[in-house]
Length: 230
Image 1 (cartoon, one colour):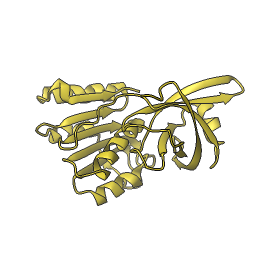
Image 2: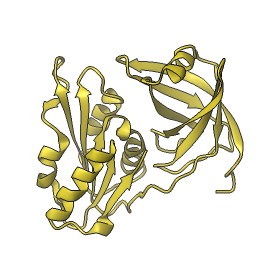
Image 3: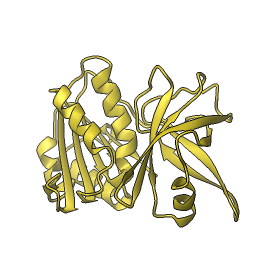
Image 4: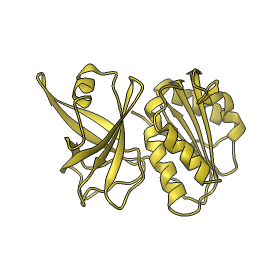
């Protein structure tokens, strides 16, 4: 990209906490901040210990107003202390978007398999497929630890209601609110072996490797399986 290596400033527009583990950030970028679905940015943080960086996939399809969404995991104490101090108007210092996670043609089926915060780049790709023209079947199998902490739950439900070509199944290990199905995405993956489909995987390494092995065992071509490592 032409903007590679540049530094951008974005301002926080909205913060939403999902349980104790995730913060969903909507930020306003500048007119020259542009990204492709599936890309990530690097954010610079500064605290009493010094400067450190974290990488985050962009969770939204490109928007005309250059705003974008992030999902930040709050497990790291340094990151959590800074992020929870943010408010609307806070400034983010970030890199230009980069990365080349596959975004298959819209006339080919796509099966997305996500674990935890691995939903982030897949949500951007799904939004782009559904909101910018007709697309072939799009499936999302999404697994979380608890149905009280499902990033982008309402946004995904809304996409499912608005787009008949989108099939959504959310699973959780612990269910207390009835917002997910019992079980795990890999338990259902073999039921979504579709002709000419691409498979987009994002989540913990062991999760993605198990999904890849299952797909290969079921006859899916290796070049139709795409992993986004984080």
